[in-house]
Figure 1 (cartoon, one colour):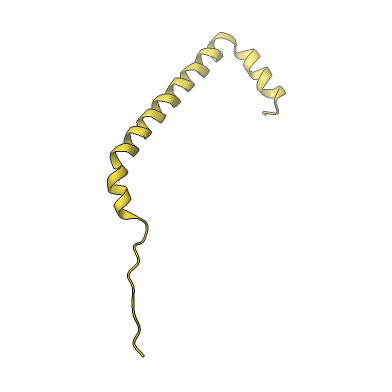
Figure 2 (cartoon, rainbow, N blue to C red):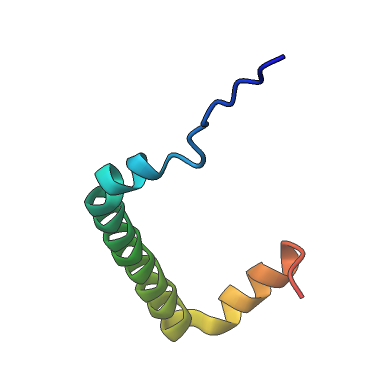
Length: 62
């Protein structure tokens, strides 16, 4: 009895080629958004660190 072998594409390598530049743009945007958020947190801490820590501890932080 003859056995047939089929080749299966694994992992979708072709998709990586198409989405490479789009993924890079998304990473850059997320990095920018993260930097903006961290800057905002720094500003709050500089203005009133004691209240920030007190609120954090009240919400269950340690």
